[in-house]
Amino acid sequence: MSEHVVGPRQVGRERAVAVGLVVVASVSPQIGAAFAVTLFGDLGPAGTVFLRLGFAAIVLWAMWRPRLHGDLRLAAAFGVALGLMNLSFYEAIDRIPLAVAVTIEFAGPLLVAVLGSRRPLDWLWIALAAVGIVLLVDPGGSALDPVGIAFAVAAGASWMAYIYLSKRVGAAYPGGSGLAIAMAVGALMVLPLGVTEATTAVLAKPGLLGAAFLVALASSVVPYSLELVALRRLPESVFGVLMSVDPAVAALAGFVVLDQALGARDILGIAMVVVASAGAAALSHRPAELLPATFDPERPAT
Image 1 (tube, rainbow, N blue to C red):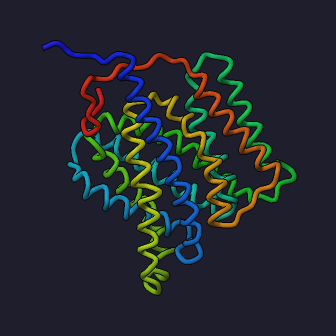
Image 2: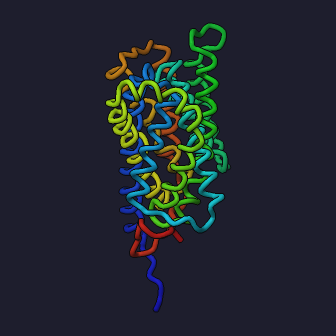
Image 3: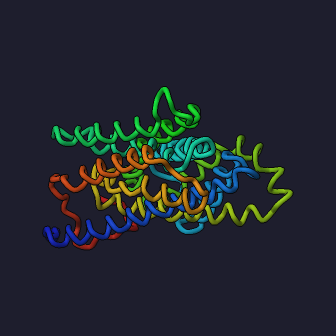
């Protein structure tokens, strides 16, 4: 039986679906993050992260019923990246505006997009993004909390690891099995800090568990599941730059939910990062990878 390989038109359709998944996966966590900030007063950043990852792990485990086999070290490494990324990001948005934190963090996937490139134009985009981030941080004159900035940088570094590991986990495990294992590892990572911060508040206000569950759905279950599917259909570089809407969506979510207004300098910095990533995506001419004719997102990619 000969293997049937799809042509460029089918690849284009698969890519279009993947792009839509990435856009939804980009919008959902920014809304979830904005609502998560409203829980920090009771649960603290670590407590909120622990409940978010814990609930997400429970949902994903029930959905995928993963078996503990295969390369568990790979899944565990993915879980460590998830735990560090989420904890660093929540610690950042507890100290600096959501849009600023997201924009700084976004340097991670943008670097992933251009590090393997040999085109000088790609480095122009990363330079433009760097200038935008400098405008946001405003070294020497900024009122931003330097600890918050450091946490946002750490979240970006963890996001780079997440992009690399996510595609490999998606190839090594069927469906979302690897993600479910990794989410449980991430929750266990932040458990000591999370329990310390959240226990008293949850006992006093059990309703906080429901709010944390909704944050888990918006911030973890929906975006990570969609990203795993999208990463099977897109190269890592394209995935990284397609999330260029993140800073803009975060700015809107921060303004609407948290009343975080931004100045002209901040808006310009965010716009430069968005333009840089969108430009890199629009001018990417890397050859498309052919997919099997019957692409099944619930089996390992080949």
